Length: 616
Image 1 (cartoon, rainbow, N blue to C red):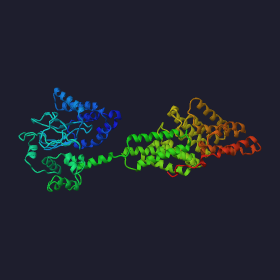
Image 2: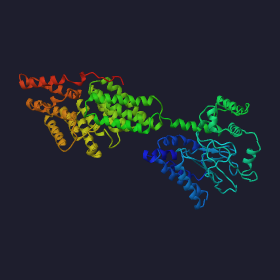
Image 3: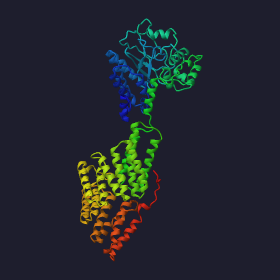
Image 4: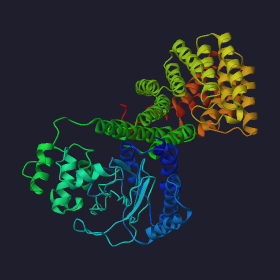
């Protein structure tokens, strides 16, 4: 996990040539043999990142090899003079394409050779680039060897390349040659010198490898037959046929072969049934189960970069909500939501990725809820609100819960469910993290719902909570998006409370404060601006000034039909209703203004068809 975490933390430019650097400190910290399960678990992430490397990475890889070699040499007590050979090997790696291998060493292994004390040892190498070097460390003997890949050779014939060298460790074995276990395309080097059977440390390896004692496992018998038939692992994989990497794991008893594969290997190697008979009846060994669990946990149908993109795209739509035509934003949001749903349902992700996707879904469903309400699709808004809340609960995100409750509160208020709207907003305010997104907006939403019920004292108390939340959060952090509550937007909600209190002078003061906020640099958005102008017009109508109302609405009438959301249309209806009061009977100015309002309302988005499906 430590190695994989370090690999995952690397940015793309840093991945070139630095993978060996990442692995080396992990080995050095352990101070012991590398467990084969850990080594095998590194294969997939190493290969995935190796695929991204290009030739410029080789210089970095050579430096990484030097770091790794120096580390292993220092632990085994090497002399400084021998470092020159390490440098030479690294330089050589740049000149000849080949492969590094990864494997598990056992006595009499025809590919790896024997070890000084005859005990199985882990062999470390890194399957990173197409380079011709194998590196291994045998613990606790400390035997360190280097191998250069050679063409297929008959068994027993020594390779000609001088890179095979003796690196004696603390053991007394006069010749210890550690060979790399290469990957599928390079596992053709066979044979290798072993310690004399007279050496105590190597006697067990020699006795088993040289006396012909029968093998006890499927993998051991398979390796013996490969050596006897003088066939390389790569060539054998081609004859079966099967994946060479899979065959390598079978040969090292890391993978249980299927009955069909065991029978085919027996047939190709002309083993007369002796090889197939060694296939164990048990399903999988504990090591295989552990590797399978690790592989299952790492399976994913989405990369971390894709998750980050979806999160950014969602934030962009939240920013666009008060700026672009609602139907256009709704279509884009629904398309993005469909992509996230396809990802969630079309495969499996790592647990953290699934949780992140659910959190993104909640924060995307919530503004879709708002947008559906803006265009009068309240049933659709309710459905998205339910989906948003479910995702927020599964993601276990208080921020997402607060935003969803805010959206649901607005839907309830649009449908005149004022008590429920106030309750939802208050719950959202209480669950939202201090200084979190949407907290100020939740407080003013509660205030508006309460004034609609006639609870003006409760509404003013909610507005005070909004002011307190603004002081805690800093107004500079409140942007004009779906969940932000700028000073001007807060004034629009305060104006609604003043309307409920039947205080036109206070309404005009709130409108003036909004104008001051925009003059001071508050972000301007059409929805807040229209609400302020309509609120000021209402105040003029309440005081018997239809001309003042007409002046406030003059620019609002120019608002394009693609921006005429139901909240703006609803406020216009309130003005038209008040202009129909008997005090304006016979007033031509009031009559003309009512006609303009009716024409404006005819372009409401509520009457426009949705091109996107209305069922989430």
